[in-house]
Length: 486
Image (cartoon, rainbow, N blue to C red; front, side):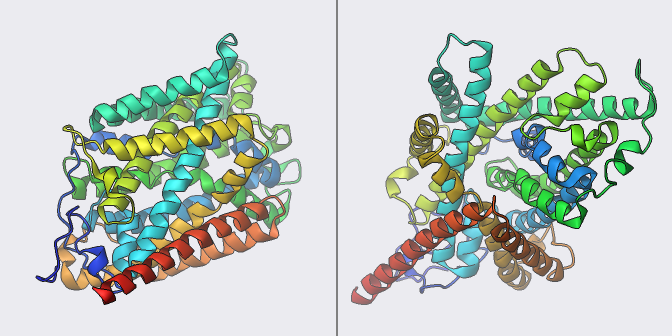
């Protein structure tokens, strides 16, 4: 609670004035007041956002690289990576259902560990989103340029950014509708792929014969590169599950945040794991893993194999939609994260301007501006300047997930003391599975350091994280000194 002698938090969302809290102290978990944002998202928006948020180009195209290193064992790689993502989302869902906030895990980290943690995880995640946004915008523009070569690639980027900025500025429900239909198309494509694949495996499609286990046991067996191949596959696919976090950010702007976030988390993680693992199983059952070419879509290879006409163009459309969907979601997530930081005094207060429709206009425009900078760097220096930026965020998601786990360890006990009735969603086998998740993330980081291809990402991401932590520490010292002088 606020000290009567101290002014109330002008943002009204952090529960206690960050400048008034002792350095490193966590704030009370149940002091939150409603944020001045819209509540235009419906349950169907959140459910489909949870399902479609992580079904993107990383699955449709990037999974080929995982199959190339793990063979049929990629199924195990996805199971392991998916299990870690499920644990993280369960923790995040527990905290978000008890304390819905547009800052989600940044707010949770601040309450659990102190201002430095909320500041660090919030800015790191924002930085991650605006850099990845450039990859998605450029990828979508490259596909569109292939369809209309006369239109310059940069023109497509500009068009996409303008369209999605306008959609996000008008009302949060527009973001929800865009994501609903984008996700519906992606989910529909995955379901159709699974159905066609199962029919082909059974030999029930024209000109097909039952496949059996030949491709799973041939070409070196189920684990042609041994368990080291499975581990390498985990490193390739683990980050494909990034994006689920946006569900808990969006839940704060839904009509019933507590119930909606719990339902979205419960349904999304199981279904996404089914889609990922199921589609990988179909691919490696129908095709020899040696036939998969890294950088090319294994989904296209399967559709071509079973005789689907124009499979490449169909998948191009699906990937195009997936990229635009991710761009839209990341723009939304970035704007809400920096808005939450501004509410807590961790970003300029000028970003708190909200439209009559409840949209954080300045926070959105600031995120778009940095997104444009990232896109320019990607178009101009993709193999130098932008590559360094991309490496700098390569392992940031693991750092964010680790802080989510540590925050859950701290906050769960406090919520049980202060408001146990708010625990509508609980972490399984607390605290043991939380510790298992932390150990798994540490293992992934060590494996990335030992892997020549992944090592630069860990090193650059560690540097970016250290820089943010240094800034957070300096801010703490300045605020402590200012308070003492006051």
